[in-house]
Length: 187
Image (cartoon, rainbow, N blue to C red; front, side, top):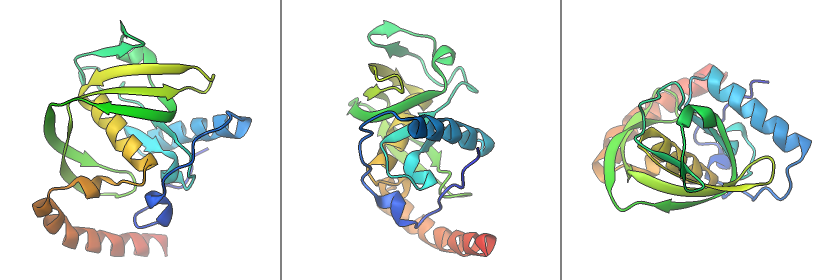
């Protein structure tokens, strides 16, 4: 089922999400609905607070762009990214690489708004899957950026919070106009 995507400034987007204590049929259904919602919105990732649920659950699918990363290791072994997409991850722990780059990002909770965000080039993410197993992924490229973006959501951090000072000034007016449009869309 396609779920409504919450738009900024909904309070749930600022929530520090609760850990998933147990993978219930409801959690499994939420994950399936989130994948369907993300695909319908042409997104790369979606976090539970974006569908008004404050749980540490997110989904990512970058398989549409097989050249978007140079490496993926799953539990220490080299892996082919398309075989692991979409990824559903719960209760993640993120380790950031030292090297950073700036690239343009958007967010499904901020339709038609994009900004240049500085993030780590490589990440190591440990997380739980729906079957209860813990895995560790190491990656770079768009997948690393998507993990950082979605895990930020689980901690109440939004991509606009990561803009440079100049970027925040530049997007402030545009965000105000867009919020008025979103309110009209919802009316």
